[in-house]
Image 1 (cartoon, helix red, strand yellow):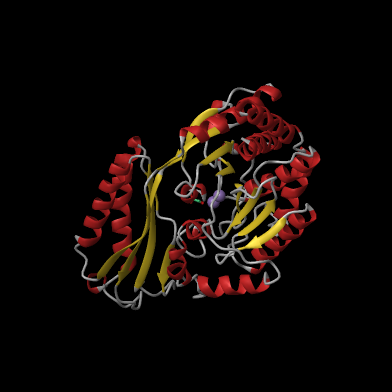
Image 2 (image 1 turned 45 degrees about the vertical axis):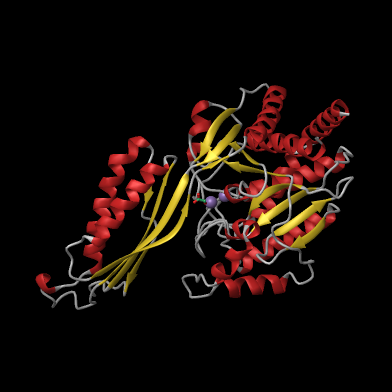
Length: 430
Ligand code: GLV
Ligand code: MN
Ligand code: MN
């Protein structure tokens, strides 16, 4: 019985893997990249914007054409289901299709499109899996329009988060709740399904977005976990006043105060860099943002990440100390926005993914996969709390992502899709 199941899983996995069609995947990536595509090759498709909704509609139509059952949940996560022989909890794959304000065509989109390619491959190979296979498109992974990131996947795992997320606003004061309702209205023809459904596993395929695989000259990475992350906003309130008439010694210049704190934070981060701390002050909002007015209000964000949670806790204490202990006469506040401890994927899932990557690499005459941890966060970070979860990485050219020039050799994208097909088909039959 055990042996028969193993043989069936092997046949399904190899059938799916061998039927991945690289040209079909290339076309699918180009088609999706046209939604929000920019002249410089990048993509601007922030979550729940009109262009994101059009892209999602395109995916729904493609999934239907493949014979999938399509459903949406209260967080507008989309699910494309290929039924199994039995109505067991499905094996889920997929990622997100929202982008940074200026992003690339692969971050997230690749994982969703490789999932649909897997469905095509299963269809072509006429594989009947024991469990259903589902492809998901999670809502708002990026967190750039509405914070925090991974709203869709975290709300799927813990639906109690959703009411709080609904109050998040973007730069134009549109709430996530309103944007979500608009998206759900537009998808009213797609059947609604409950969140937090049981899953037998989740496998996310993604570009690495960093330099490790490229430097190692290896096309496939088995992701062992995700480093921890904390987000904050620092807000300084002074007095906006005339740039030409206000003597320097009486100014309450919020920018001057923020620059000083920012310098100290950079020094703190530089001291901890060798231990793996990464810090970014990515978004600055300056009021009134005028050349000849002293900034009265400045807010900047802090993104700090590390594999070592202790180090991140020490950074947190230093940041709090800097903001609370500044000598400035104006007001300065620190708002913690998001915190997540490191994620470690279970060994049994790492074994499934390693086996899939090994066969893919061997068949292509490429070096064996290597283990690595993810510097970026992903929806898999939350799914890991819900079901056995794993990730596969392919290299990013020059380690570059969150940039229009984000790129991966097409050959590597195909290898990643083959490895994903093997792993998911295996899990769906084992
Ligand atoms: C995801 O986009 C991240 O910032 O890690
Ligand atoms: Mn991503
Ligand atoms: Mn991203």
